[in-house]
Length: 269
Image (cartoon, rainbow, N blue to C red; front, side, top):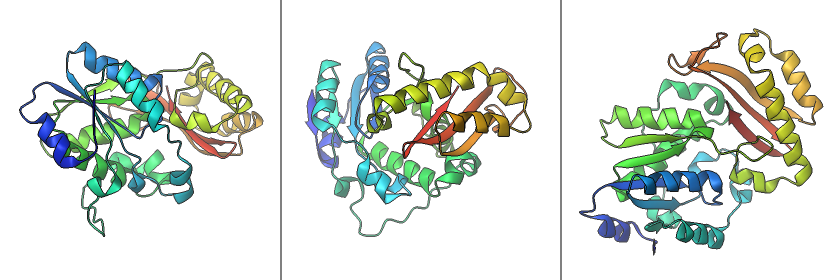
C-alpha cells in the first residue's frame, strides 16, 4: 500500500493504470467503508481510497472542527484490506486558490432534505468530487447508500458532464441494533447509540404508515419521546421520479435527519 499526499504524485502513480476503483472518504473509517473497499477488490480493481475532510460541505464550522479524525487507524484498516493507494492530501492540494469560486450546476434534487437544511452542502460535495476526480482518473466510483441523496446528485453530475465513470451504489452497513454505521457515531455515548437503534427500529416497523401518512406529526412526536430534541425531516421519496410520495413502491425510500445529544444523524430505508 502506498500513501500519497500530493496531486502530482497520485496522478503520476496512476498514469496508464487501467481498471481503477475509487472510494472517496472523509476518514474515520468503519465497516461501511470497508464494504466499499471489498467491492472494489472483488472486481479486481486497483483500489484507491482518499481521506480528506472537505470544509466546503460543512455549513457549520463547529461541525467541521469536531468531525472525528482517526488517520492512523484509517491507514491500518486500508492496509489490512489491501488498498493499493491512499490519497491523503492537505487542503492546499485540493483547494490551492485563495478564493474558491464554485460554478457547478447541481441537480434539482438538491433543494430537498440535506440541501434544504444544509445550504451549500451539495455544492461543496460536487466541488470536492470534481477536484478529486481530476487527480484520480478512475473507472469506478464506489458510494454508499446511507447518503442516498448525495449518491443520486453525484451520479447526475457525472451524467451532466458526460463522464464515463461507473457509479457503484453500495448497501448501507448497519450495527446489530439497526443503526447505519457512520463516522459521527463515534461522537455518541452508548446510551445515545441504544436510543438511535430504538428510533430506527420504530421507523422500520412503521415504514408503510409513514409513507402513506399525509401528516407525520404523530411519528415526529413519538421520535421525540425517545429523547430527540430536533428533527430536520422525515419524508418519503419516489427515487424514480425524485419527488415526495405517499405511495409505497419498490422505488420509495423513507429519509430522516435528526439530532441526538447534539449529533446530527441521517438514515434512509
